[in-house]
Length: 186
Image (cartoon, rainbow, N blue to C red):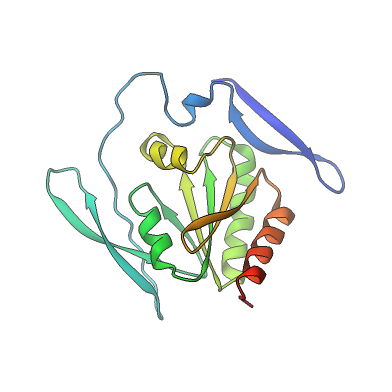
């Protein structure tokens, strides 16, 4: 697969900030044939302390449905998928939610991952989520309008209010602070 890179300059030197496949449809699994597994996975989160919970239905590999809890947790990054994302956003209530939309093959995504994790550990007022924009999550990635990775969506009250594209940590921090201050959060 050909890869197109977008370059942005930081304070000191240019850096690769986004990845986009030359044939964008491949990012979301468009075209290319081949059947992907329709199996859906559940989210398992183990934490202590108080947390908000929501129960969702998730299809397993068999034909029966099983209930799984979707939990909005602070202090860590929670992996989500197309089935767990919206229930977790809803369970976050008034908290700001930041979604890291990435792919396994994206270099800038790999650079941002530890920084995103560090932000989640420092900012206990925000719910940090990550979504692998692979074939299984294609419908959610399309719904959220992803065009490049990494893309960070900042949500408040279940709505996207800000977006940062590329490996721009300072811009992401500023966007989160702007949303928090506009919603009266400390």
